[in-house]
Image (cartoon, rainbow, N blue to C red; front, side):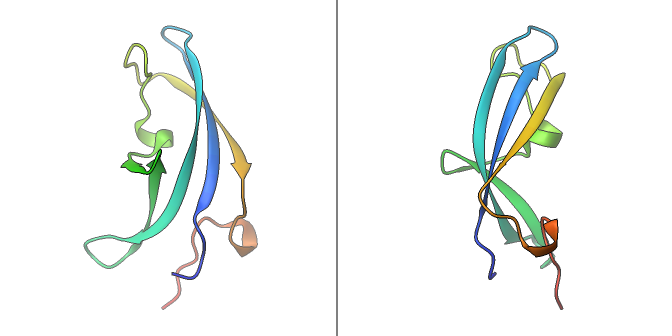
Length: 86
């Protein structure tokens, strides 16, 4: 996998309790059990579910979040998260 991990900062706002927080995730390309390339999210060195699809409020546990991404670091050429090559 030639590309370096991407650092992506996200800001979160819980629509249930109004708690706000942020986190910087490292996004790496990994192979799944079928040999396909997938994005894997890491927070503080530990693998975590995608904050975009499975995020939860750290205070009340609600899934009703407003998420804003702030790009840090470099993106692969063409702006795509992943490029699949045979």
